[in-house]
Length: 337
Ligand SMILES: Cc1cc2nc3c(=O)[nH]c(=O)nc-3n(C[C@H](O)[C@H](O)[C@H](O)COP(=O)(O)OP(=O)(O)OC[C@H]3O[C@@H](n4cnc5c(N)ncnc54)[C@H](O)[C@@H]3O)c2cc1C
Ligand code: FES
Image: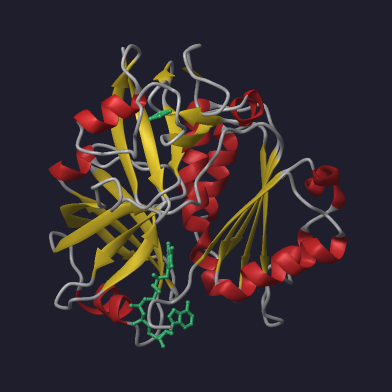
């Protein structure tokens, strides 16, 4: 039986390898051209120490305390020269991808859908045979090259990869390079290249209630995460608050409804900040968080949106004196800055 291991490097690059139950993760990585730093290969030096974010595995009994203490093992640290996978795993490697002699993968694809969902938001799907090999953790992003330029822009996947197709939710920034291409000239069949996957904002194992906070097209990674949860299921309560600036920014509500039908423990609400809004719920996401969502801190908070919103939520949590069990965020920092 082969398992899929996501190796997430310090620089945000993620590579997926396959590992059988009877080879070490370090050996499997090496076989597939990725050199996790190793020295003794014997469980004695600790050079290959990484952190397993999720998954089941066996560390054996051969390693010594100097290389990995019992406390470290209990926390999730692993020696990859000893680790044998017993399920798919996500492993954080504490060095950059270049140190491991690997780099982000790139793919060629063609536009299969480009559609203005509203004045401010574009849905983009890309399809290609090479994308059938594209694996990523829901929540991650890729760099898309802007056709006709040497520049690229980062976009979070808003779907899982299915039959070589992936989707994105993109804000139409007036005058923006990618925005102009997508809103003025892009058509089905146009070629586009992707590089990635990247990022440490991805869905972890769900061990407690989740509070998901999305700002504008920061909804994208949550769509991919929720698709994954709809497939794998969870008993834990999930609450998503989706905040936008104006009524035109409010998109994909039907898709969210459909996901809530598939995930019985999911609830969500949306709110619009503009005072001119006719939407019933107004204000910022922080005005719609209640004590139940924070669960006395026993909650994993996922937050994605423009930098100003991410900072506002961080300050809000601090003011409330709430320290969530885990706090993951992605800032949609404009590339031009
Ligand atoms: C990790 C990551 C993931 C991202 N994922 C997404 C995603 O899923 N969906 C998405 O829509 N965007 C996402 N972004 C933002 C995206 O990469 C681009 O910055 C954005 O789409 C603008 O690109 P552009 O080429 O159209 O504009 P640019 O040519 O880059 O910018 C033109 C001008 O507009 C300004 N500008 C750029 N963005 C904004 C904005 N939002 N509001 C106001 N002014 C702006 C720039 O500073 C510049 O002055 C992500 C960014 C990061 C870092
Ligand atoms: S390489 Fe020495 S403990 Fe793994």
